Image 1 (cartoon, rainbow, N blue to C red):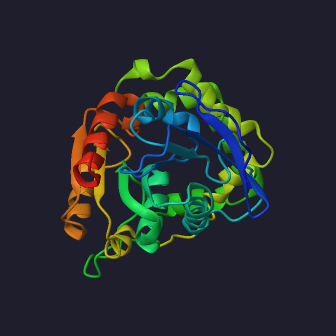
Image 2 (spheres, rainbow, N blue to C red):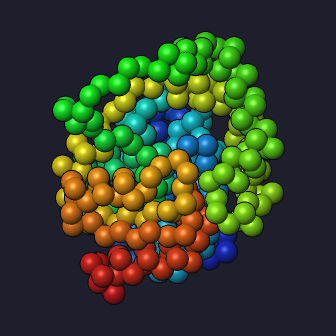
Image 3 (cartoon, helix red, strand yellow):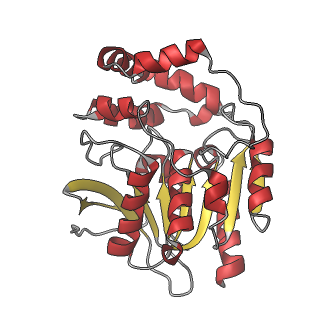
Length: 298
């Protein structure tokens, strides 16, 4: 079920789709192209469709561009459910099938990258291609690797965060604009990209009913399929875009792991942090456009 509205180059269409009785927010801009697949942009943890503003503006002339708020984030509903990669995989797969209506190139950042990889690997009929920007998700540990002893401090913190009150207090802290800004300053190389608008776009959804419980579910969610398991099932073209200044991951090391399991991928390392699409949008848009044109035709 969708609503209709007019759209233009400067103002993408915003509307809602009902999935499992929950309102899912998405935006769409640009016209469908016969010789180019649509793009579906999937945000990371704590972000939303707003985080793709520069990507939508830069690519909507060449592609039909869709961006979706994952359940629990942005302007989408935030029910008291168990959140996991399996849930978001199901949401994205249903959206492509029911709303977009044709295979799409999924482009995901961080958590959205893992969800996009799940869809592309497990539902190849829905994925024309896959773009991962500083994608999240663990690889399997080699069986021969020695098992490290659990860190007792980390284990105690995780156990504490499973309790409602400590989790709620932590949520109240991380949703403060000053905390959001400090976190962004850690993961963006170009500090001028950290605007008041960006901070507010991240803060605003945290005031929605149910947002605190979504945050708490991070500590409870079970691990899904590992990245190497998913890559062994993947068949579509894969583009990896790495913000090499990301302090949350060793991009060169992780890139080597991706190449081990999917040697036909295309990859680029950019002078950016965890969110290259927002920090160096012109580079990301140009690389993404050229990569699709190379295999999809002009």
